[in-house]
Length: 311
Image (cartoon, rainbow, N blue to C red; front, side, top):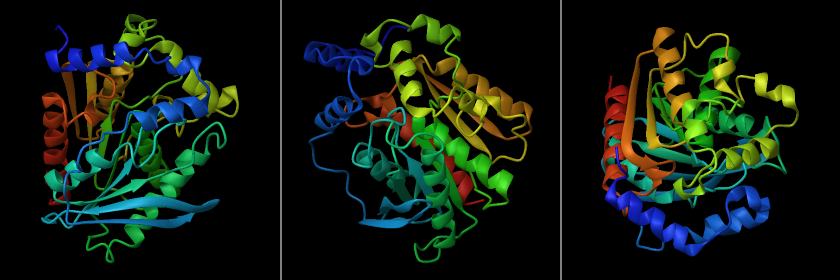
């Protein structure tokens, strides 16, 4: 369908700024750009916000913990920001986490995992798994039930959420209650119809050249692409993973790989909701202050979380 009018207005404003695409920048410059794009308005209110650090495999991991006034589910959501494993921060997803906490009625633990290229794969997944494990171990202190902890993330963060869930299954770790996966990257091969459709057009926020740039900074060696903790589509089996909701966007090069992953989850016996949002692009989930479909997606994801965490 045509671009959503609100989405088109956002894209036109971004195009008018004439910023370089990611693949033409250094990681440092790309991070500066993302900082400049942070929302400037008043934050969505929650009952409490706490910044702290938790133990990680190579030192402390910063986290930000959001507690809603209505903590009806007694659950928690561990959230991993996007940014191609190279850019992004907990500040970038602050409003998203606030909205999810309120709508889902759960504590949200947002994780500032290590970024590439300074810390290549598997640093990010190991940090995310450690932070998710910390959340389960400390659920009581957070006012949560350790059996009601879910994982989530957008884009690269969605990939990291799948990695945390797989690590828990494979290593005998905590059993997470749910996965909310928002347009995850699931494979290194950039050959799907949606990747081809948006290969060269940076108007839609993310291009295939950008994905090449992100993957090149993230992976330590080419054979890392065969590791399912980097590329979930390469997993031999998805059986035994938590129930999931997978959100995709129509105008997104990652659309088809996310939808294929949702289909594989279903085929593996994992209860899965697959929902595509038409007329919007990659990154739309984080635009709730200016985009109705982002607010709808957050509400839909939160409803799925609330149902899973109160079972």
